[in-house]
Length: 537
Image (cartoon, rainbow, N blue to C red):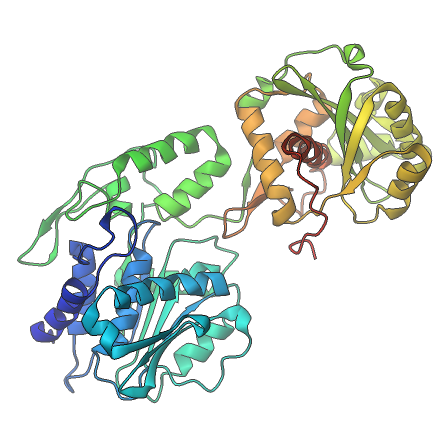
């Protein structure tokens, strides 16, 4: 049954007592957009025969900047202040302390902006807690998955912000199972689409919501709310805005394209997101495969895989203008060294600043023994590259690091190598020798997202703007074609093999190029190299 009075009570709480806290709407009443009004009304106004709230769990998935944090904060405050639950424990949960703080800060600011609410509440910023003054057993608290165990709690309401960042389900299970003793608990998860293999719990909830919304099965306790662009749709097309049927409280004409994914996009009823914001992001996404993944996730709410093809080979080939390596003798440069396991390719790339571009000069090594069989088995022309002088073969069936050291030392006599960035894994002896015997400035660079994201994005940007010169080196081109990119939930990236089961894929030269670019860009900014990398550990 639908109880109009309960629905109106929840809606009025938002619109009469809460105010926006940021941006151009700061200080203005929180007037719900039609899609938000429908969500809040149905969530709190639908009741069972016992008169208690029917929906106990809600999953809301919308793109960024559609007002998720404000909506989540409003739900938390309503459950604390207006739901009539004695000793109410309300929690807003997130993957990290910083993320958990976002909804709390919005909620606290909303309370402070209303004299009546401020009179009812005591805000403790240090513990991210809001207490009711006349009921110390009722409180709202922000918690995170990285804060240790949360056992022993008894939630009346739980708001999960950005559920796609939850890599484990521990906190979800503790909080959702903890509501069992409450008469009408509410778990409200609100999130942007994520990376399918990064957060199993969020993906499970997404799929469950999709199936319930599609009518595959019924769950009278579960409320699905999914906004996103269909996978088969053309994501470059804006589509058209929708119209709202106030009498039936639903879309009269359903929006399409960007408008379907973003219910708060200007043109849709109550929309406030600038259309130019989406247009600009779309234009960038059409130029960059990495930006495309981010655009689809954050602006169109499409789930993506962690790994995707990285470099557009048409753009790569446009960077193939030849240059004379002999002209670079004595020039300052920065190196990247990607040491392989003893039986695989080792790559060393020097990056030279030539005008407004960066010229890449790569050197590659591979064991000599069995080279013809390796080329046949992997369908890669190692033997032809070696015959053409593009690939150095070291004696035996493993990489001879002494040969590698000698070659790099010889390059240091020809060029003014300022720094060499290297993957510190399995590189201690060689890098120590290069440093102590030949005076090279060796800089360890972690291989996690934290270390590689910035230089990888810089490298990608240089390829797009034709600021890279690679002289059409066929080995480097092959590796660029092999390279995929992995993206974490925060949008950080790093180059990876597209399919680790494929033994004939190699990306060593691209990784070495990224590390060389890292040394060069940091030197331009006069910033120290970050040695520590928690993501690597």
